[in-house]
Length: 98
Image (tube, rainbow, N blue to C red; front, side, top):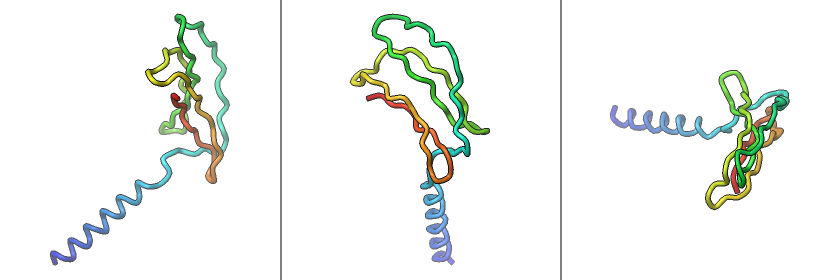
């Protein structure tokens, strides 16, 4: 009986581990259009504009508007996010600092 529980526990662990290994993004059938909004002027010299980002929510993607920020240490350039077409539809790749 102890051996049966050990084997069953092992298979449950493997199933839980493998279900978390799928794609970590949400896809949509039609790529959303970027909303139009007014970009304010920079709050001071040396600020960089970070474009808006799409974040996945419970009902698809939600757009967060861009903002001004100072460059992060060791990083001087912000690479904006973009939409990629996958097998199941469109998905958002977040922007990053380089």
